[in-house]
Length: 214
Image 1 (cartoon, rainbow, N blue to C red):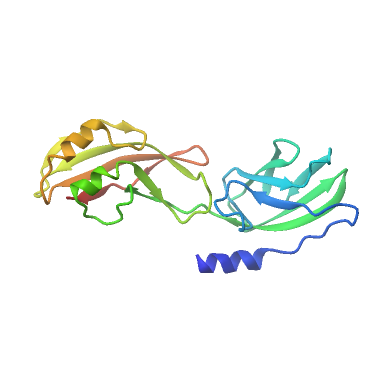
Image 2: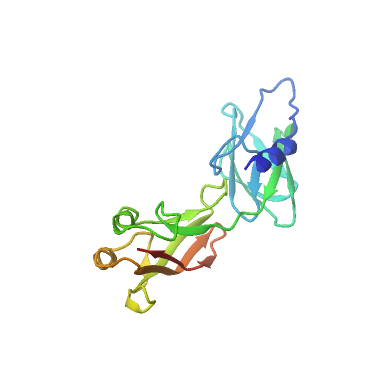
């Protein structure tokens, strides 16, 4: 993350504004941390330009993104994958006001784990207290991927299948899952597989299976 901060800081340039206008701050409200000056390629980045309440005709142009104006101060930007930087320019009444340079990044690939269980082993009590699948990513983008469905399979210590459950929609272990997990013995395994997620582009992707051993 330290390297990322350095890259982003180097990517930021100071904006210029006409004297007869106030300063306008670009904020990407789809980012977890507003201090970063970046947009994600292929994603619908939402940029809110603060300080435009008294302005009736403002628009934004971009060197690398498709720009859609949602309302007077909110814009949606979708940068192309083959670019690394994006220059955004703000115009008010057709007069250039401000320019900012954004770093364009590719969304990182996330992984899936059961709740806060980061290890391959966990007690039954720990598993019962972590019943939601959790996407783990270094991304600063709030809504890059969403888990759609998964399948649970339980196995004994020798790898023999105990039970295979139907596909479950959503992110939460069901009552049936939990009742079976309560009966598992030390060394038994819970395999979470057929994990499907929806990306920010609306595409369905599969994630690798993972196993938690009791």
